[in-house]
Image (cartoon, rainbow, N blue to C red; front, side, top):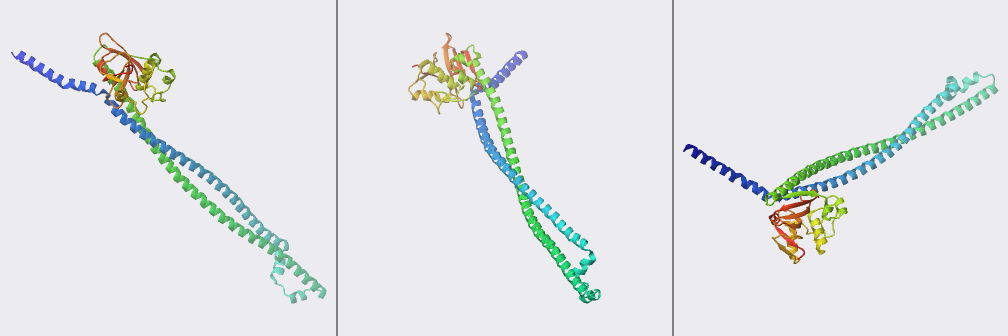
Length: 377
């Protein structure tokens, strides 16, 4: 009796565990396309980050241009400083040379003679007593006056030259000081611009890092979404088989296949290598009447677009129809290649795994899609 009770308790426990976990698994399958919501939100963040990166990059280029201009201005003012410094050095050398000329003139005339004739240390009476006669005195007086005049004129000329050089030196010193101030201002401005550039590039790097992380998260979510879609297909019934392959096998133009996902816009306003672009291509190829749905071409918009255009929709599949999943931010469409005897369908489509690739699915339950559009009537 105890064994029977224990078995019943065990059975009840297993039933409760199944009741708890099975709905969670089914719920996960039902909301597989909810990855679209997360992906869309992350994609918007990435777009915002990319805009910030573009703005900061433009600012950085502007700052780099400003730095280049400051470098050119700094080089120009440094050249002017070098010229002024050369002039200053020449004037200092010239002043030293004139001072040496004064000393050389005094040495040439003799310290005693220079003092005698320039300083007027000997009086005319002393010169008269020291002369042989009046004629000798007159000669000495004339000679003294001549030497004194020549020496005075020479020294005065050299002193004038020295004074002019001193004025020029003072002017060059002022120019040098002004130029040095300009250089210091340019250096300060350059440092300020460099700091701004570093800050801008730092922000740009931060946004790039955020963008990279979001793109990695998008890739992860897309991989999960692809797995969830495959799981939904497997669990919807039938003997589901997925065969990835060459998009040209479905007839999709090789040129569009050669482009990256969303590389351009097709003839019907859809981004290439998307499920809607392939679906539009198959409809046009089969019937030649694919409407232009640019700007309202998300997969989950197709049923309403079709009904508004008078195109038949149904929950029953047929070869040559478009199957539509309406859930998620964008939904999904596929081309129904054929319907099997057991009611399962064979389809071809693009971008079911968010990778822009082509795939063929066989023996898929028709309940996988919410709506079928009969473009052929």
